[in-house]
Structures are given as structure tokens and as C-alpha cells.
Image: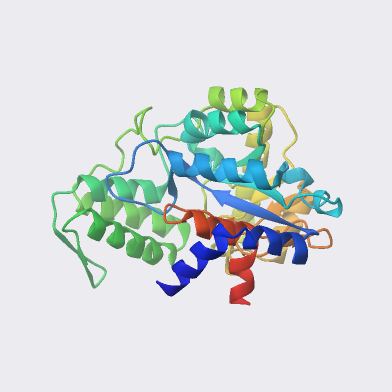
Length: 331
């Protein structure tokens, strides 16, 4: 409570912006979103940001910062001016076209979307979306799974259960994660093969939407593997297939050379030097993780840092993240 109060006071005084200008003027912030939705989910998930909140965040960036394409993010801070920010979106949800693109057009802001290419143009979705949807639909009030008991009485308890289950599932190699998610969805009474409707918040982008986003001149596309498998839990051949396959698919979908990549999950434990070298051999010039912190022009361009923006990010927290103050207070 005290931390939230302090954040709120700081944000109202322009302190985060001034801190960035004075102490990190030669650095850039990269922000990562996933999905942006006009209507709240039945069961909240951190990756799904409210559209009105997102628009206010973009209005702030337009007024206070210089938003640049990700491909320029390391060169831009060398110039004097407002704090430099780049926008990224992971996974490739269709609401990046339906909801995000109109806001980007309104404020004339560039962004990069990282595609899980195996899901493009399909009736499938991300595994954690299957889980969230099953939690929203289930008639169960409790779940006993893997020796843990989950209370499902009400939307808030289901959201808490979903967050716990996601952490538990991520501990498994990708094939096991997918299999266990299917079993979990079935245990909740849902069909893991049910088609994802076009108007679902879980729907992924298709080739037509991708082409229209490219044509807008505001959106670049990068690779995010074929299946969103965490690279460190794959063998060398599987890693190569995930990386090379997604890069080729992005190029086929956009007609443009793919020069950017986002590591799935993106923590230091989720990829290693061999993956960085694979990207370099494939012509990738910029890659992003989920490590937080400022980016400088001398930093390794294939291991850049990003700040995650989620459903619970307040206006004050958004400013604290964007301007490195949250990072500084933790280090």
C-alpha cells in the first residue's frame, strides 16, 4: 500500500520522466504487451490489458516520449530529446489488429509484433488461453491437480488458480506442457480442440490481418518461434527448427526479411549463448528478452531488456516502469 501511494505521488509530479531525462537520457525503454481487449475477460489474466487503459498509456507516451521502431531503439538514445521508448507485442493475438492498430494510428506510434508462427491463421490459440477459457467455462468449484487444491469459487479465485497453474505448467518441457494443458482443460469440462471463434479475445492473427498491419507502415513483425516452446528445454535440433522455421514463416507472411526475435518466456534461464548464435547466423539483428532494465547503445543487441505491461499495471506503475524508476529501486 505504501509503495502504491509513493508511486502515485511520484507520477503526479513528473518525477519519473525527469529521472529518465537526467539519469538515463542515453538509454531506451522497451515495453512488452501481449493482448489488448475492449471487454474484460470472464477470468482475468495478466496478459490481457484493458483497451481504455492502453489508450491512456499511449497518450502518455505520445506526449512525453519519443516512440521509435524497435529496429532503431539502440541508435535513438544517442540523440538529445525526450526519453526513447519502443513498443512490442508478443504472441500475435488478433486484437493487435482489431484493438491495438487503431490506437497506434491515432497517435502515430510504431510497434513490433512477435509471431508464434505455428498459430497464425489457425483456429488454435496459446496454451494459457485454453486454460483461462476452461476456467471461465467450468462448473467446478474446486480442482485437485498434481497434489494441489485450487479454489474455483468466483472469478477472482479462478484468476488466482490460473496464475498458479501457469507457473506449474511452465516447469515442464513443451510437449509435456501441451499434453498436461489438454488434460487439465478436459478435467475442467472443456474441449481442448474447440475452435477459437473470430471474435474471441484468444484468436490469433491471420495472414490478411498481418498484411494489412504491414501496409499501415506502423507495424514490423518478428519471430517468436513456431510453437512458443521455451528454447532451453529443447535439444539442439529442436531449437534450430523453432528459430529457423519461425523466421522463414515471418518472411513469407510479410514479404520482408525478418530481423527481430523474441525469446519465449524470455528469462535468462530460457535461452543460452547457442540460441543467440543461431539468431546471428540467421541474420537477426535485434532480439528481446523479458529481463527488465534500460538499454544502451553498447548493449548486446540480441539480448535487449523489456518491461512487461499487464492488466494490473496502474498509471503510476506504467510511468515508473517506462522511466526505469521501478528497475532502479530494485537494484
